[in-house]
Image 1 (cartoon, rainbow, N blue to C red):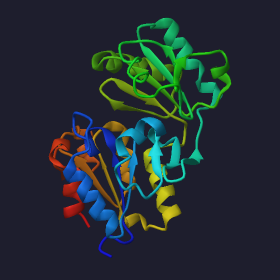
Image 2 (tube, rainbow, N blue to C red):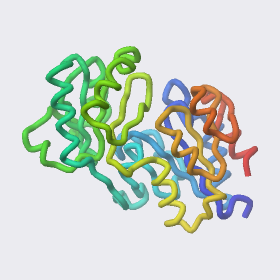
Image 3 (tube, helix red, strand yellow):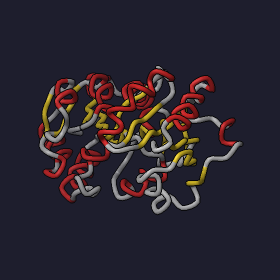
Length: 262
């Protein structure tokens, strides 16, 4: 079939979805066409399984997904974790130091699909409305759990100022995933590494992998793909890592990729 042997992996926010967090009808129909003609489709996101599921439940996701910026490879068809990486215990202390010095910063801890709010800010209430029963305040027991991701939150200008300070205390893997979100992930985990593992799982040649993204945490995903696409609304650094510039996320970017890249 036309797309047999191809794997398309896309970031969700401001790539697959428009600025309002909606998957357009044009994108949905194009993805159905892609998978009906032999293609494998999945997402790569900083979200956990339950938060991602709400947005993709009407899409034909037929390959393992990349969650929490590469810390988890997840099969939505069987609702199971296929691979998982954890933040080392030695890196956990950085969040304590930052919280004590700069209590106005928000911090969230992800363990599998549970989220623990360690330090509140204007953004930390957003998840309680979206993931019932999965979000709670930080507990003593949570420090000994396996952490798949830490998230530092603040306004764009605040994060720009304090991310370099955070990196003084923790030089491990991290990437900004949005203007107000800074993702701290396990060393050795990334969207790009996960793409390679999924391609191998599915028997896809790396040259036939297609990736799309818009933000800094997508750069290694784009570099790992056979064909890389940055949407028009992406930053210059992301566009520089891409082979192709696709339309704006508000203009059916994924449909354009499916119709034009092969």
